[in-house]
Image (cartoon, rainbow, N blue to C red; front, side):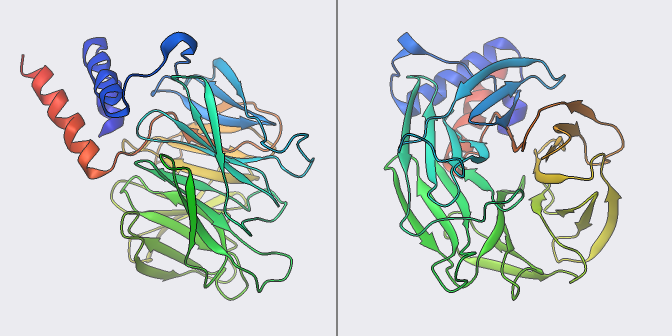
Length: 320
């Protein structure tokens, strides 16, 4: 819903952005950086690149690492947009930070959770944002007995906490249906998909997954259908886990997947760059990006109260 409003005519967009500014307070616009909510975001070495949907590079935003110099292992793992216009970056590997960028002031803040880390490999990480909460996977690939599971950060307070430490996770994402999805990372949970309420953090469903299908990324469409990426294909299931179809992908090396409410699909690869397609996966636009490309839409998913505010604002404008 937020995305559909964001790409309406300029008058509506300006009012919506003004509404978001009201929720955030009056930003310092002297160093203002604008991120267009209709664009996409891609990790590029130690920066985030913004592209239009036809593949045109708009800008590159360097991502600092709080403990300079940045170790070679601490590369960017994923990116997601918050509902209020800030950007969240999974910044690191063995000593990661959740780095929040505020375009209005061109400033960064960084926070972490003790013991949080992931494997130094492609496809072993992910984040998802819901409102001003940011979720990330956590996995102990050293001892397999340490704290692991998922972490959640409050972008307003800069605090983070671990939850669901019963098993490690390989990917975390917020679906277009507003649910929190994760893939198990341990041998005992690798074949399971876990679905949570992102507000209460309660586990709603655990879905079994075929052992021969090695999941690397997870996403969901607005109807709650689940898409799990592996190698050169994606497995689409119903919300209850029943198989709908297996779809071939345009790349053999997918490591990230995001789906918008309107059915737009982003696929990140560590070899072939980025692909933009739809839920049919029949046609795609490729953006060649070297390196391990993780993707995100340049708009966030508001919490219900924010959705109500934006819907009411849009309705009042369109009624005039």
